[in-house]
Image (cartoon, rainbow, N blue to C red):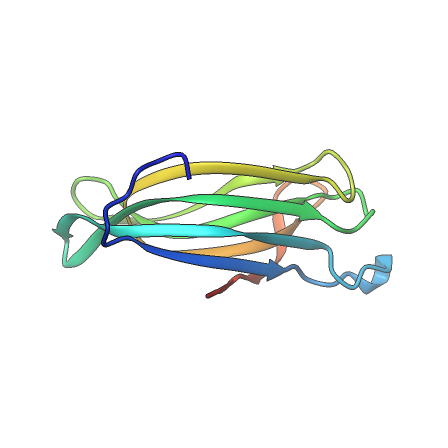
Length: 135
């Protein structure tokens, strides 16, 4: 990771084998993997503990269907007054089948982070997704 975390940090590995697209001959269209590191930071806000941390992740497009892949996140972000539900696609693979994009990033003031590997649709938005297994 490109950041320093306290000794109390939890590090989880994750992976998601994306959804199938049998109409295009793909048993698995995407694959996401990496590590997720988080720790309590900033105290309780609006009744929930806030967290900080980071990701070191990769996403791969496994289907030559021309649509691409995305590592997709859902989470709640503290805006100073309340918890707002957010989504993000910190990694998108739009360069072609069998390409992989890797990236690291940090976050603060979030909770309930969930990770997905998704197939992109013809407009470049996420369509079918599979939730990552954390271990």
